[in-house]
Length: 508
Ligand code: MSP
Image 1 (tube, rainbow, N blue to C red):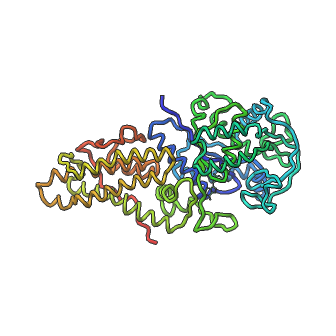
Image 2 (image 1 turned 30 degrees about the vertical axis):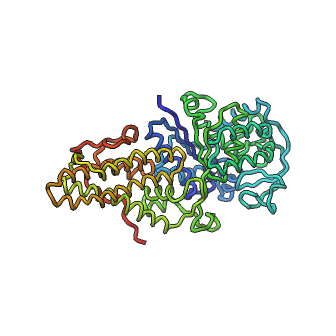
Image 3 (image 1 turned 90 degrees about the vertical axis):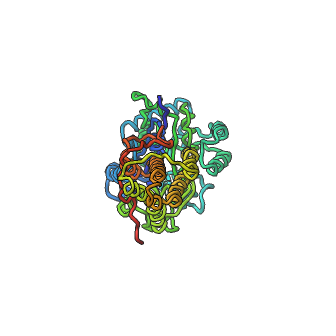
């Protein structure tokens, strides 16, 4: 039986249309899902939309539509973008779906049955853009300490979750599982936050109705974060497990999120799960935020980068590569068109694109596209070949650590080594003398084999490019790396096409 791997994106609010920040989270999950699949795992990859709550209700009202009309319209924008970005999710959950609503109510009842939910009165402040409760002391100049926007005072009857009860258990869990919250800096931040003291959490609202009713008390709707976080379970069929997915994929789970929602995923969610008696997910990784040309992306600045436009202009794999390569996963980064163009022209057109076109063009010119055998190896070849297993082991570790930009750097060290190998072995000079024919054949075999391995490993990042390389080399269709990631898989005599240029240069 193959190992299981479950990866999730946050579910996106439908009050906003997708921008590159959203695309980034989803893309990172896709790269990981593809990589794990290629490594033989049975992968569940979930994304979706967060459609309830005051923020969505307000946005719908402002647009003169119902919240569901708004959600139905915006969800299509997300779904079509994921298709265009080549996202290989296996499920898409909407919090307005029956399967989700039923699961959330069940989850609520489970926690209630534990005695961890009680009715009280909430009297403090609320930030609608963040859908977060704050005490007066936590506010900064009366505004939300997270996003800086105005908060509103609310006083209403509310169900509370006994989060305080789980403080010690949560600290212990985080301390005993150093990989639970990543990167480390976030883990320390959260530990400090918890050690400051956990308060009970208000988990229902009565002043609006766009949400899932509290079971048995329909005057309340369930707090949108309690509702939203539960999507990770309801998508697996919780509480039923007819498909077997719940048992198969929970808790073998990695949640990828943006750093702004770390507290919800590493404090609220785990304590909810503890109360419901369910195991905690294995890992929560919080990535950084993208700014644009040095500025925060915002509606008022109208500077949000629209991914569809980028993909149309530069190509899907180019955008995927840039987002994963430019910034260490976990840190903030800045988007600029010039940085994107630079990456495309240097890393893709010059380095990888040239390697593939030069190698296949020479093979076609010198051997009519029939792969020769490597019968004449020298130290130069041995050193070149030896780089591959070492780099692949490093690459695998970096992928496991979600260090995408490092994994790409490792891969590009192979691209550079292969380009240097061409320059050092100068096939064009060998081709001038028939007595070098066997040597020339070895160089060409090694080069094409290097292209194959690079194409294989680059596929989770750039699926179309991987596919083009695979077709150029007449390799059978498979998305598996298993058994393919060793030197010498290509069989002499194989027919190799001359590749068409993979990445056109962008003239600025
Ligand atoms: N609905 C909640 C998540 C619920 S998960 C149970 C939410 N939605 S969101 O649409 O506002 O944000 C979704 C994700 O997009 C978050 O992980 C957030 O960090 C990410 N990003 C939004 N803007 C971003 C950038 N500028 N840069 C990088 N990621 C950003 O929060």
